[in-house]
Length: 248
Image (cartoon, rainbow, N blue to C red; front, side, top):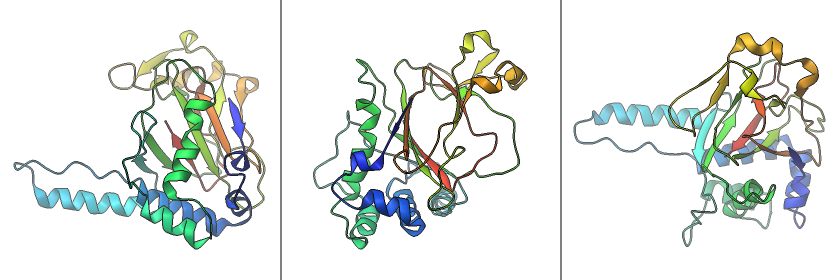
């Protein structure tokens, strides 16, 4: 697990300082990315009700811009380089509005490059999936320990959205446990090695409080990169954030 500073990725412009000092900027980037990475569901075949499809599409687009709802989308992994003249117009506009010499594609590509450069693994799966997780709660909940994938070498990147400007502390990122799931009762959600491995909640007591890692968010620690195939993780027992992005 490694914390990375936005200033390491973007040393030549004001993106890191804007991120640290402006909640409006963070929200604008978040909304623009939701619009840019939105994954349109495949159109219906002739036998499918087109009106139902349009209703579903409208609902999905509403969720995509509702910051109280978790959104999902897709990005271009290194194995699928960006086509010529590719752009993220919504992100381009926001970055331009803040006078940043950075395109949306450059921002996403630079950020996600950490998924392959952080651990330098010889073989590494990349899904190209993205989540903007908006769950936020202050009343403690039970942990739901899991791995998102069973693929060897799976690396995940998170970018945190703090609850307020200047915040430094835990509960923005997921919590982690360096515990071997072979010693716990688990199940697989779905089929194949790319399906999540889930720890039965009756096993939670076997993961001691001292085993739980709560990464710190703060200036210079805005990004977290970790190996999903080595650690169990869960949403925090209580959160303190506006949201968190997850790239796989």
